[in-house]
Length: 450
Image (cartoon, rainbow, N blue to C red; front, top):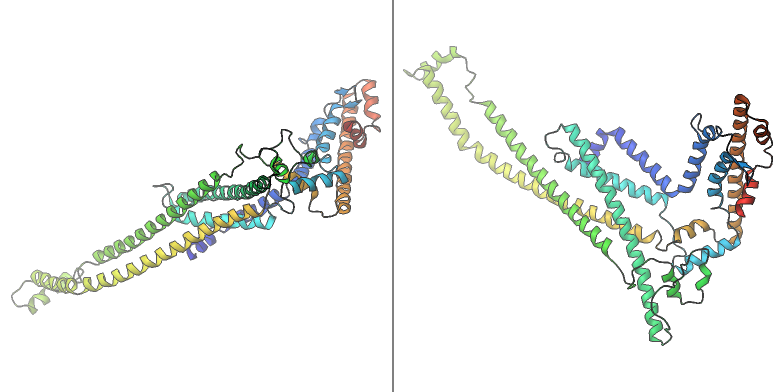
């Protein structure tokens, strides 16, 4: 953990960018509709190359049926795509609630923003942890900086893949619980002698708009009508097996790599110690030649060179006799301690990794939907438990989108008039451009609903 923290501190800018990206990505996922509407406004209002600037150039294309310019219809159509999604009434509330109830998912919610942030934070921590381990193995022969960047890229892809797999596994397990419930209800009906049909969905496709068409069918058939499953109506664990296999392989592989890195570091420390010892040479290697006569005098007739060799051999024999044994014993104990401590740490890290993946699977089971249109039904309800609050919210949203669309339409019409004045067209086109009081977004809604 200390190594990972040191790694994060060394790459502060990258860490901050990843953290900011996590927050933005989580917000985009949970507020996708609002983000798309914001982007639509941005693309229309962008100077010079925005849609208003480009559509205003077409002052000749005119729809004789609706008596609208094509550019005006294009703008209104883009905003109508958002308007129709919030054009809800009391019947929409009843249909969405009935659909979720029949699918067995009334009360479920999509994954909250803070959960997505937590997931992506865990992904980032996993990625940096993997990057620290894989740094020396990603691009052999490359520089250390290049290896670290490559390791971060590989680790991020691996972590994102794991998030996707665990989320899909959680969704599969949630669907399996619904399938088990269907089969259990069907079996109970059959045991009671009231079963009157095979266990298969109706031929008619059930959506939110016609959710009441199968209200006379048993509950398990209504649930079956809203879930995509195999023809045998049996549970499937394909994604679960694939994910668990991948998790085990990554956990074992990461632990093995960590163990190899630790052993490599221990071996490198020994090599460094040996090099230092060899570089030290003999304690008399640097003795000045001028002292040779003094040494020779101490040993009688022995020459200075012979005396030097005898003393060197004497010290080397003592070093071989005492120091290697002590050093080998100390290094052996230290190496064994480091190795056992490292292996225990790697085991804990492996268990933490597996637990994080299980947590991702649990999130997938607890949040999200298995019904074909359950997510759309939930987004329609927007969490409102009363019809009054539901209608008040959608009235505000319709008003907001209609006013925004009308402002954009007026900007387009004003720009078209300016271009017409500058270019000079025929009198009929000029008159059509000037008389635009009946070409409003409200009027467009009138003939679009028809």
